[in-house]
Length: 97
Image (cartoon, rainbow, N blue to C red; front, top):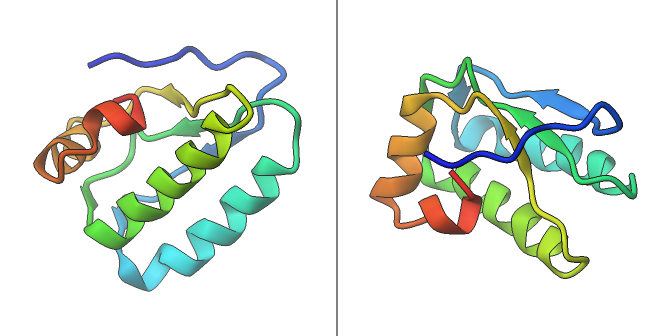
């Protein structure tokens, strides 16, 4: 599992234990706020116990937006569950997990 380190200037968002379709819109709103910063966001995925397709698509869209400005999500301790969900959907490389 490869992760970027979070800088002290990064805005950190602690992801919830359950990333699912019911929280995808709220996740999107939080991430859009973080994208307003010139620094790449840091996502703390250590508490994630499950992640579904909808939430991973939101993360992928953010990663694509960051790539357009030569940045990427910086991950802080992504959980095995988060990494496994991304791997199952073929998004592990795209998400940098």
